[in-house]
Amino acid sequence: MCNWLSILITVILTFFCTEGWTQNLFNNSGFELYNQCPTYTSQINRCTNWDSAIGTADFYHCGYYAPSGTGTYGNPRNGNGVIGLVNSPPSIWNPSMGWYGETFKSSLTQTLIPGATYQVESHWLYTTTNLPAPTMNCFSIGFYFYKSIHPPSAPLTGCSTFRPQIQIDPSMIQVGSYTSFTFNFVADSCYDAVMIGFFCNDSTETPTCMQVAESDYANVDDISLIKVSDAPITNSGFTSNELSICVDECIAFQDTSDANRISRTWYFENGNPATSTDKNPLSVCYDAPGDYDVTLVTLYECGRDSIVKEDYIHVDEIPSVEISADTNIICFGQEKIISATGVEPFLWSTGEMGSSIVIKQSGIYFVNASNICGVAGDTVEINYENCPCHVWIPNAFSPNTDTKNENYYVVSDCILEEFNLRIYNRWGQEVFAGNNINSFWDGFYKNTLAPEGIYVAKVNYKGYADGRLKDEQVVRSIMLLR
Image 1 (cartoon, rainbow, N blue to C red):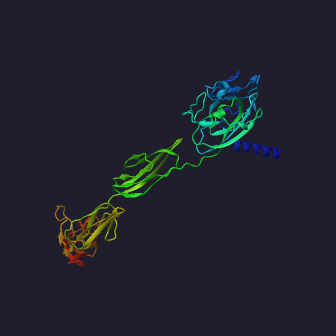
Image 2 (image 1 turned 45 degrees about the vertical axis):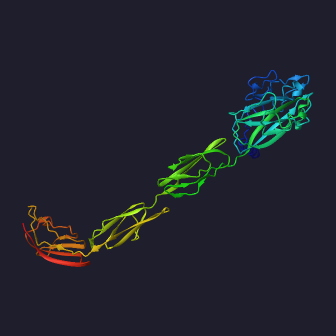
Image 3 (image 1 turned 180 degrees about the vertical axis):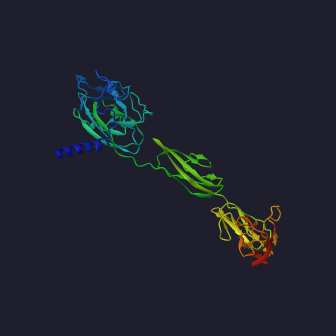
């Protein structure tokens, strides 16, 4: 039981691994399907999916095999269906007509993929008639693949200019016994249709072949078209001679796609020109800074491909920088902000980056702006002077809601590095504390009006005077009046 199960699984897997991947691309490849039984020759239109291309090919089925005095036509190899074809040089029927060879045609179940390899198998015989098998290669039997939107044009008599991709030497076909032929070919286009039958070759209309007074009749059966290997991967791509440029500079581009491209269209975001159909655009210019996309759309015989490189081209602005700062003399201890405008990034002489810096001392300050397009710079001189530092400490205030002298605070005309104010009552209790020059006492202590009387204010501060930072402490009696 297990052995039979293993065999069944193997058969199923073999089917899906072979048949599933080896689909026959010919329609009705054994000619078994029909829309009406044939009753006479020249009725290939009754064979499902097939029809004549040149002449009137014959279809045999339903027990009709055209017996005649010259032999039996239409012996199938397998099943009941088969196709018959005739060819003849002009000397047989009418020398003025020219060479005559029948072909039949059909669409394929799938379009062929350019670059993929396909295997064509077919089976041919010459009928058992009194017509001899050809001994000279005066014509070819073969398969001609084409695109249905551009069907080949061939005369009914005489030779056409096209040649089949698969050619069989007629002298290799036996009389009364099917001969098998297998060929591989690489599709060079997206063919979706086929013609099968007799074709001219280079010797067909030579005097030697035109004088051969013979006609031939062949049957074909059980044809197959199977893809045996995939096409190579199609590659699209491009490069440029530069990735980063300056404003008003130009770049050259090169298409690195496979050679089978028929045409191409370039799209250059913010470039000049904005589009191009050249294979290798040599001069695309950019007049504004930024990062820009480049797109290449290529066409090949059977399709199109598109590749987009986002922010592929970087365009830098020409560096520029200018310091904006007044040069008024300021006092030691004061902070000063100097700023730069232009094309960032900026590097200051202090080692700082950014559009502005804070300084506290005299000196010459400079800033640089640089990128691939060059370097720009600017300088400024800042002067500090020794300014006196005055601190005024009041000795009285009157928080009585008359809007005059309501708060007690200290006033200074300079920058103080440190400051604190402490106020004590007569019993030494701290009634107020502030650590900022803008702090003030409103006359309240623990949310209650402080009584009138004498208080002590203690002020500590550090401030610049005569170019030096001085640490001062002042103790003063103050009067609170109501």
